Length: 128
Image (cartoon, rainbow, N blue to C red; front, side, top):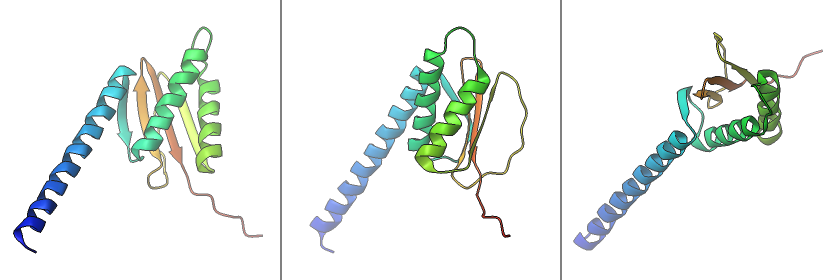
């Protein structure tokens, strides 16, 4: 490669790194605005954002106090219909868990005083 091509490649890498940093900062600001704290995750950001928005919307439309069962069911159904089976959801203010999940399908987060564990497991057909 000649000097111009090297310089062009260097600038391209620099701009790509700036874009990635900007996206990371925007994600951080978004979660701070919603008062969300990710406790543990191996889920892609797009799915995390979907879970945050879905949970926040459901809580905003819930009259009165938290209905954890209703919130868990709604999140599970949303993720099952959008990303396929078999999603599981646990919602509460205090719980312990130890789960096996599919790669890229685990998110444990909180906002306000509500903790949400959303994870996907593999579905295998039964042999008859």
